[in-house]
Image (cartoon, rainbow, N blue to C red):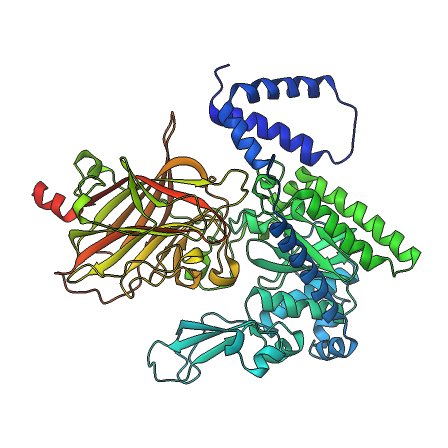
Length: 633
């Protein structure tokens, strides 16, 4: 048929998307439908690779594990139960007393703003409230300053579990961040407890998006607005209120003082989202279609964490449980609201037209430091800096290859050779494998590394199992005896090296509790080499990478410029037309590197935890750019 793989994939996924997602109600099959299906079947059966990919995407045979269903259920129940805390009348009165009368004055229309519907009193109140909350009441915590001298601090550690004090536990702080003064480390530590109780947040009045949305929900309820809290799986949270004028739920983001700009996260921030779920005291709803600009084209492809039917059934059960105690009149009213909300979300083209006419929708994120926004890839849809790693080195033989380092390659743990490739971990659980080579590259010299890697899941498995990393350590003297870090979420490198050392991780399993991981797969730069993302200085945007656990061989190219102390990374995807994906370019933190006589100790690590996955390397080439410069001279 002469169709490229990309076009074949587009046809098949396009057909599946339209028929399995958009058409929620049964209908008569048309002649056009039949022809599309015929095309789909022909293409599908002629492309075995595509069959495997589609089968994998739809979880044919293996299905979703009981563990993932349980995790989903616990997550939804937890989010649902949290909405009750905003209904405390005494707490609502305390919050309302904080609101100035000028904010409650709904007799004056806003002096500026571009609105897609006629504002009535409730709408004016919500708009006044979100602007006042952002501009006058709540304070974004970063940068965190020293309590003694007001100089910026740096993150030092996190307290959890038994390390928390009584007040932390009382007010729902599951963790406490510890920050130390950059100017004088002897100054008192600045603590930042992540409180989850609105009453305490009324007192502290500081935080990030979680604290903002948490407390703002209380203010919305305190003035009598029907409100919900909205959780996005890509680590953001905001609110909605119900507008009788618009006859739908209206987006409010108190971090940005944003009003009715639901597509700003994708069209403004440049974020790619999967699940967006709203929770209130009268039910829960999947509102992803209202916030994901490309939902009908690619957005639904990113929804791989939970089974769609399971999710819909659990949200419906939560809603039914919430509403069965309400009067019939109220239940009917809410059912009509649901229908109108569904109709609004289904009008994809209409929502896009409104968004295109709104300047606010296309604004980059304002809250947070510049470095923090860049690390989260939220500096704007077009704010990324493009770059390309020079390929001049490829015209010369590498200084080190898998074959040339036979006598100088230190293997550890499960790592072993197999013919002409390297197995870091076999397809088994609880494995750690490492492979390091002591190079002759001085710590003050630049270098390029290319790694051909292959990550393969166990048959029937539907998610990745931890991952692998490239590690750069400074070596002075003999190779250390211990060259293995923590397993599981540590990817085999966590704990190796210190200041001045770094690692690039290829992470295929999202570990939120231990590492605060963004969605996987992701490729990120960490310095010092620790897997928790507070040490991350660059990361690929969510859903910007293909599936990296599919058994296909890909190339990770990393360039380290010693003069500027920057690291660049690219992912090379083979095929008829080789595709090169620039991943990131980042400056390493100031480190006080060892003397120039020290060498580079470069290596690869990988690990698995409770899920099996094979990590294999077919090529590991290293170019010493300082030696190439000498040759050129």
